[in-house]
Length: 84
Image (cartoon, rainbow, N blue to C red; front, side, top):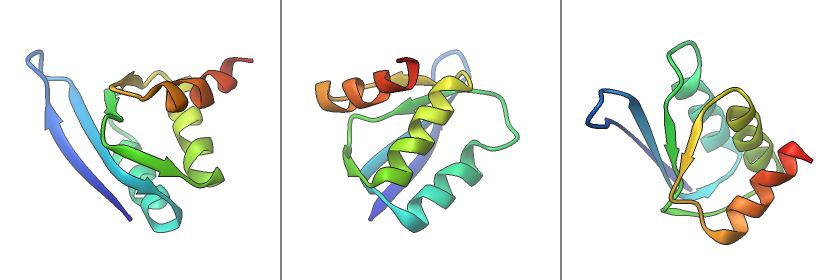
């Protein structure tokens, strides 16, 4: 189960905190939160894992210009695969 929290940083940019495990329903929720608005930052400090759809969405968002913050070494490496 994933918890998504929206906030703004000091510059007013959107920050979406992703906590827990990103799977099925949470993938759709994150897609909805990130759709149509200005790009922001995904704070992955609380991300504990994801299924394949979750990783694919995170790679897609990164490729679309979303910033990534707080990612673990493992998450960073998985997300780097988007650029390979």
